[in-house]
Length: 138
Image (cartoon, rainbow, N blue to C red; front, side, top):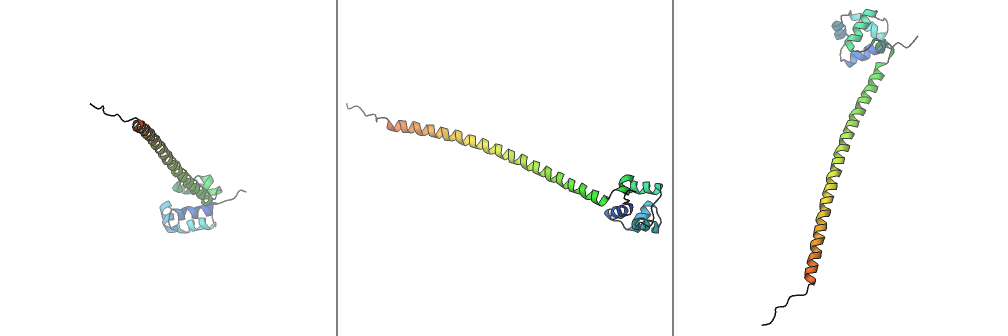
């Protein structure tokens, strides 16, 4: 027979919902000892009660009975964190790409200015090297 994680899962789900056993059995409509017996593995609910529990917690019957939800939830949380980290990294890459483009544009502008200044310098050197015009004597 496959592993039955029901008792582990109902305790995990209840604690995840931050509910006491008393609060939960009142919300779902079970007797006080019934829920305790489910969590300790003393008894297993009938199909109708299993459906009621799975609907309340929003999990499938298969997961409720045959999966260790604490491990599954942990993997889902890890994936969510990885997704958030990936989105942050993608945003940072986009910002860095934008910064690189701005720097390249700035370099191009500075290079153009350097070329203009070099031309102005050559023009000045040419002007300085010209022989001085002497005034004709009357």
